[in-house]
Length: 401
Image 1 (cartoon, rainbow, N blue to C red):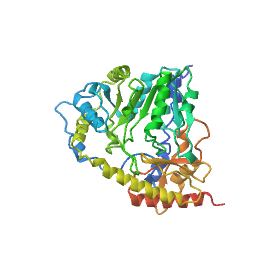
Image 2 (image 1 turned 135 degrees about the vertical axis):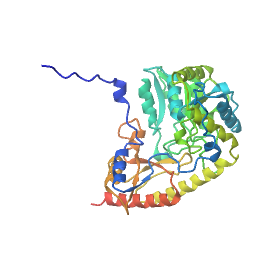
Image 3 (image 1 turned 45 degrees about the horizontal axis):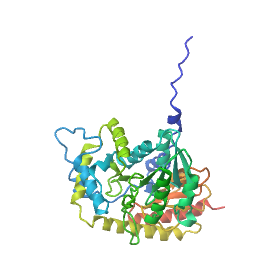
Image 4 (image 1 turned 180 degrees about the horizontal axis):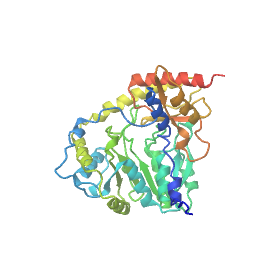
């Protein structure tokens, strides 16, 4: 008698990589769409604003679409260098490395700064995919809490200092923050950077949403802080800024030559970032100087509309976000995951419903965020009005005796 062979076992790392908190209900949404239900996607940061023609027009292919240098073409790194110069940050092309999206920038930065078994300090709620990257790298994340009733402000420098151990290799911040929409000031970031410098660890700053700041705030970079050349590593991306999420282009920016060297060697292993997309990105050099002004104004109007609508719903709690195009809201539903799944699977108004991102997946600490959701305001204003009304009716229906 023959016996069936057991399948080979995947690694513990492979088993432990978590599913995306942002796409958690995608299967339910697809089933609803198949029934003809229109979904208002407030769960994912996919902008609906047109990618600039200056970028799209560059998408012409050469006779051969060849590999480019692992760290990006000189032309596209010059474009990014000029972009940073406009922020008042002087960088050499050698201090910039192009990556396959901001996600790879974060992953490479973490892998360059920490070994398996090392620790990184993060503020929760946090960008959910950081957990995936840490799992891939065998890095332990140690969460420090930010709170909704304090506007999710980052903890004090003293809190960070107390949390550092002999295994801590980096602190990671996101500014402006995804998922909370909080914007940290230069003084707040500097205080954390001083702690990192004192303890000889890195400060990795995710600045993907740098341009999206409201109420008169101006974009800036942690790289503008003086005295932290060996400490600060910035992860950046073009996907949100230019409504080009599918381009998958990001970059690491740092004056630390060892970090650039290490991430560059990692980049050689994946050969090249997308060639045509780099050609497209060269088009940002032709964008009008005030291009982002109109985009930011549009998002601020959406933020204000959504904030006014949601705070008018009894029991909904949130702080006015200062940046990015997300926020965390506490809903009077008890279990936000169950509510969000029910809403996308079983609730509709005039053939439409709303998809949310349950916020528990943005926390490391168990049981935190169970009654919270992340909401992205990436839809036109009329769609946001409809989404708010649907959410209002869904909360009422959910809480009916």
